[in-house]
Image (cartoon, rainbow, N blue to C red; front, side):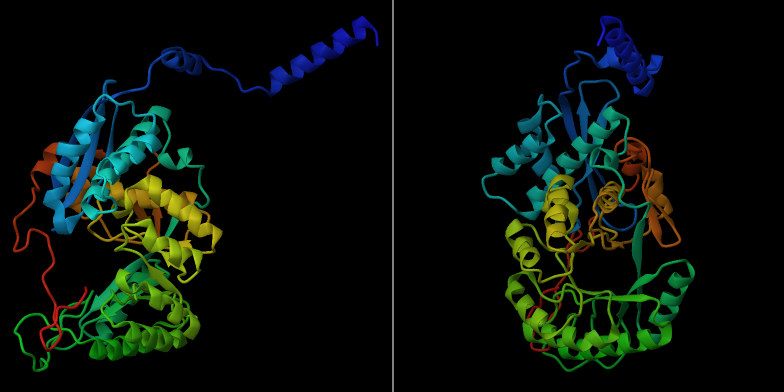
Amino acid sequence: MSIERRGLLKSIAGAGALALAPRITNADEQVARATRGTPPPRIRDISVIECQPDGVRLTVVKITTDQPGLYGYGCATFTQRADLVKPAVEKYLRPFLLNKTTDRIEDIWQSCYDSSYWKNGPVLNNALSGIDQALWDIKGRQAGMPVYQLAGGKCREAVDCYAHASGPDFQDVVDIAKKYMEQGFRKVRVQVGVPGMAAYGSAHKDGDRLKSLHDGPLFEPAYAMRRSLKLLEICRRELGDEVELLHDMHERFTPNQAVQFCKEAEQYRMFFLEDPLSPEDLGYFRQIRRNCATPIAMGELFNSPYEWQPLIAEQLIDYIRVHVSQVGGFSPARKIAILAEQFGVKTAWHGPGDVSPVGHMANVTLDLVSYNFGIQEYSPFNDRTQAIFQGCPQMKDGYLWVNEKPGWGIEIDEKEAAKSPFTAGPLNGGWGEVRLRDGTVIKQ
């Protein structure tokens, strides 16, 4: 080939490559110049924002950097022991992290996790979650992208959710479920009260109280099991086959009763039964699997990998539904989702009212980027909450839509938050006891 011909081909190839290359705009060049050689931001301060806009204590961590206007928020909500999270952040994690760079999210998570020596407790996990999620928020703000883009982008357009239909009697539950179905929800969790008892997830129903050896809240599993199974029968008959039914057992049954309940519920074609066993009784999931095909969701009380790993690896559950801040934040929850995908287990993150809107945005982000997404628990945000947390995920026709702004897309009005401080309450946000007839405290 002649020198002239080689030169011509080189010129054509160069022109083609130039045509295919992305165009560099003046704005792109200005950003590149501004960031070229700029050191990563460092943590200048860490503070805690506490508020109670809807009767539930919410805790958010704010990390401020040394770069003007660059900060991030992370959910650290542990309602039942909320007063302990703030000192865990400000007295322990803050001095440990001051002046560290914000660009090493995984390194910071691992070093904080190890710094307490004893690990996997709910207070420190929630404190660590606030740090972790705030760092992801900062990373998204730096990149000018929502966090879901940093985690690989969307697997779906929006997030399918279920709503809560709870009432003192069967018809109340059916009527509420129908209203949610009219709003576009295709999946509904149903809970009914038990006459004279403190049933979980539903209003108390007046009725004759069983004779007992105490005057406090009363619960007897056998009565509740029969009533809940009757509810499922009625809901399937009255609501039809198009709606998916869910029910929360809330660890209130003995292991043997839990196996019976799951087996009996199989005929009602459940979307899932939630938390049939307590974390102390995980071995009984093998019995449930051997006896029925009812889909099972588990995990909102989990703190440690030793709790969720065997259930996922042995395919003993169908949905993993940990409380994201309870396991340490967005980073470990993303790893749980990836692990679960390898074993055909889907995600169903815990999403009640005692998760801040920042935490809900982390949930929705995980839902968008996880191929093995299953369903998302939905809790509405009242006007007071939205006045404090601007940019909450939006609900439409049973789907939650993520905020498309950088980071989590949420800004917190701290002056508004200060107008809704923690209130003392009878137990400072903690739960009271529920007992059997003989006075034995039960798990709840």
